[in-house]
Image (cartoon, rainbow, N blue to C red; front, side):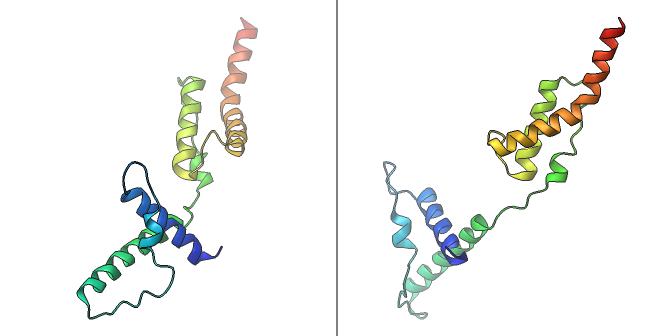
Length: 136
């Protein structure tokens, strides 16, 4: 599927999501997004309105179909606060991953990344706490 197909698919989903027919029935987007030449005339006011709606739908489709940028460096520059619990730190790390990477923290790949970054960022404090307990 090329770029045109991705944009078209996204536009159809947007139409179905924003303007459902009713009772959860969808599928109107495929009829509203013409797949072949519409034979619209520029001078016809009704056709002009249809063209404007299609243009808006295409623009929305483009913005949804384009992959969001992922900023892993920004996502994982989160550091554990001095008095922060590991649970609170993990929550902040997950939120940062969701915000800057657009990844679902429940995804297996994302969980692997979270584990590595959680352990490497929290380990110095955990190691220090363990040493303090051994000395007591």
